[in-house]
Image (cartoon, rainbow, N blue to C red; front, side, top):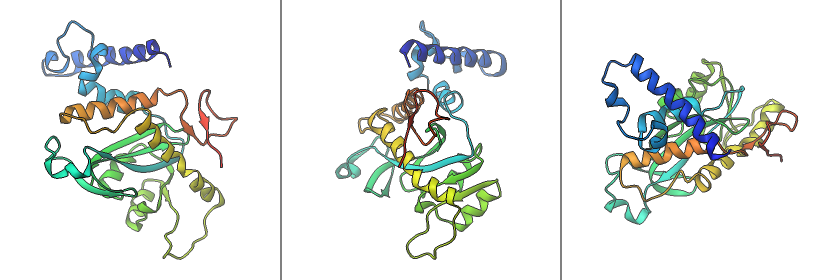
Length: 254
């Protein structure tokens, strides 16, 4: 998408946001809308509150009934500097991923079958993927089937999601008894790698992770900007069939 089109989309949101603040909020509008010579859309990277709303509300995808969930570590420093790190001393925690130990945060997110991010949640690095509060936050607008890796296996989590009309589908662990699985569910589990591709896009194209932050606000702005930038990519990892695939979307096949 051209930069002009992106700016126009951002500007339209900012105008609606400013109008809402003037008409609905009780506090002084200058406390919410920065008083500058530039428009809010021109300083979006420095206005955290509207950037949060823009990323969550304006740039999220729509659930189609087929969703994928995963988490990815966001390291804030090299492991050798953990004990001397100060910027995120009260926020970051030591955690472990499939790639080993890290110090920082976890980005939990859900995507649809077209590779669009539906919801996301940021936690410290030591929070388990099956954390009930995290999953409750992520699945507020989700329905249908939710495909995940073995790290999400939990009978309690399955029951909680099932009560919300969400079916959690995972592969069985090696020490678990094999169970019959619907053919379509088995096929969709093979396509679950699409969310790994989204991870790759976020980190290598949108730069969602780096270790040069100098404040918590800077970290949040970088994270939200990266998620918003991803939503504008003309080609996203997708499992849509060729006939249903939106123009400009990359379709992954086995």
